[in-house]
Image (tube, rainbow, N blue to C red; front, side, top):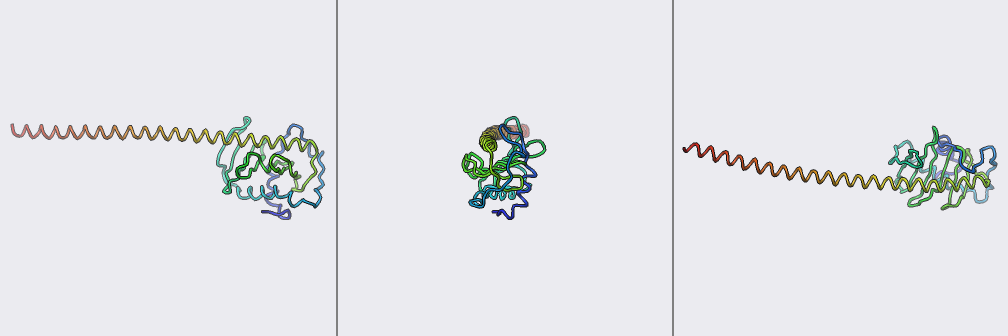
Length: 212
């Protein structure tokens, strides 16, 4: 896990790659205080972005495991070795990432170019500015974070439904292919039997003609 002192590589990349979208009720960057939170409890507050940092580092430039549609947008999903899930939502030329702990329906981290958010369940636990420092959230940011948490839930549900549909379609296609193969094997056996009978009859006819 990366510490706050080491959050220069992957965390910086998060804010470079993630997009800042205009969300309902969210304040603009200049409206948000940039002062970091007090030192008390701050190390624990950084664990959300630290954990997301580690997973995004592990993801690196690997291709996504699944593509899916959500809200009319082509999104991407990565299934990590530890059971975590990363979803990416394109926003213009950039992306917003949603990071889920194994088995969770709601993200513990959401990040875009302007802000990143840490969640404890569905509750906002930390907000980070574009430099990775903690900031004191306004009411608008809290509302926007709640909107993103619910959006993350909807995105993961859409990913799961599409994955299940693809799995069902794949199972159906495989079953149809196996059935077709069985029919072809049966026809081949019948054809071989007919050929064998015809061969025997030909040999018998030739033998009968020889003795005539």
